[in-house]
Length: 304
Image (cartoon, rainbow, N blue to C red; front, side):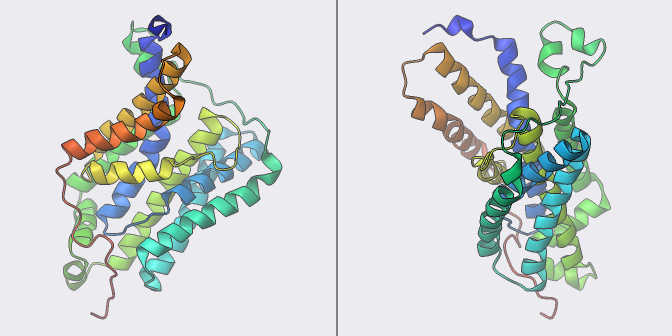
């Protein structure tokens, strides 16, 4: 085993890239759950966003249009979930699971003709001056734009939830939808918008996999990323900054286990492959102190 082959600067830089799809999906699901809705279909929305983004990017030659297409695809799938759970009052857990299965099947169908095709290149940004700082520059300031979009989304979500009237209303709906309805707030409309935002973010996370990390379309390429995003939201206590830490922890463990495999560590590959999931859950459970929104997963009916 040769640990000297592991470059710590490259390891930390790769950590941010590996964490980005999880971070994008998780921050959207955090908003959904703060609104009192439990959507277990993150995996389905991510894989749908991955194939929609890839198809649009290949067809137009523009990765940016691909990300827009991915957000639209994820939001559309989320809208189906919203209609079923908020208007037809179906069970949120069952509908979310069905959404995942539907997304996996739909993406396989759409992506049949795109297997083996390379996505248009999405170059990294070399931020002037900052990117030239020793050690810190290559780690933080030489990534593709979507890495910074993820960080901006985390900051914007925290600001929205804690510093704006809209965020206060959304949290009120999540805590007690009956009281929010009695005060005159449109609970169903607020939740539909939150659900669509979550779907768009999940779609962006999926597109990041197919346009940046791989970059090509492979059936089932999310490989459980949606489920770990769900776990991070819960174990991070529904707090944006703690969620960022959880996503980076998962990304760091993912990159580290790949480097350890390459270095020839005498541990079965299967144990190394499952280590990111175990480490993320254990650490977040230890530090978890958040309380779930009071109306999370409960069906709202305006006539009550």
